[in-house]
Every structure is written in structure tokens, then in C-alpha cells.
Image (cartoon, rainbow, N blue to C red; front, side):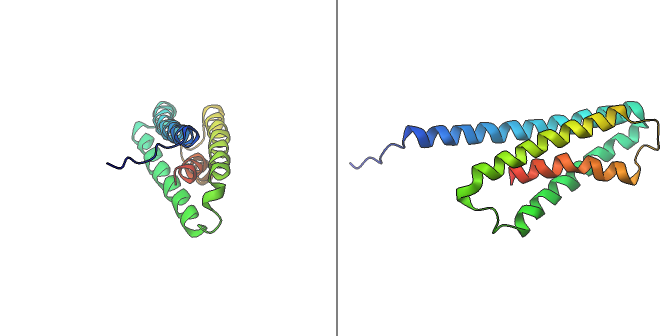
Length: 130
């Protein structure tokens, strides 16, 4: 009977860290979507809160299309670096988007500028997930 060689401990550790990081980015994306939905439902009309879901889907699609169109830039040997950059950009844009959301004045609920700024965290999230 031939038994396959056991994977090295380093390779197994890298895979576990990768999947944990992937899970954390996914959980943070879902939490951001829920938080933005709640904030919008409080500061504006309730039915506009579901517009956040559309913004999130648009941002996630934009991130996936970005990775697809520039796939030659995303090489397997550079995967860790690309994931770290995308996760850092997601974290920073999430902080900025939440600050803008909470500190903004009573303006029309969804002005065109507000829409484009709300997409950026979701864009970087799906760049990390793609």
C-alpha cells in the first residue's frame, strides 16, 4: 500500500492562515453592509437603506472585473502581497466611508458623490476575495 507524503507543516500553516484571512475579510464585508444599511435607515428614509445592498453588489462586481481584466498583473508568486494590499485598502476605505457616513450633514440621502464613495470599500474587498 502506497501512502501519500504528508504535507509540510509550513505549507499547511500557510493554507490555514490564508483561509482564516479570507474568512475575516468576508465577515468584515458582510458586517460593513449591515452597518451601512442600519445607518442609512436611521438618517434617511428606511426604503433607501436597501440601496446599500445595490452599492455593495456594484462594488463587488467592480473589484472582480478589475482583477479579471488585469489578470496578468496578479501572478501566483505575488499573491500574498496583492492580498495584503487589497485587505489594507479595504480597511482604510471602510474607515473613511464610515466616518463620512456618520459625520455628514443633512443633505439629500444619496447624492452622486456619496454613491461613488460608498463603493470603494466593497471594490477593495472583492479584489482581496478574487
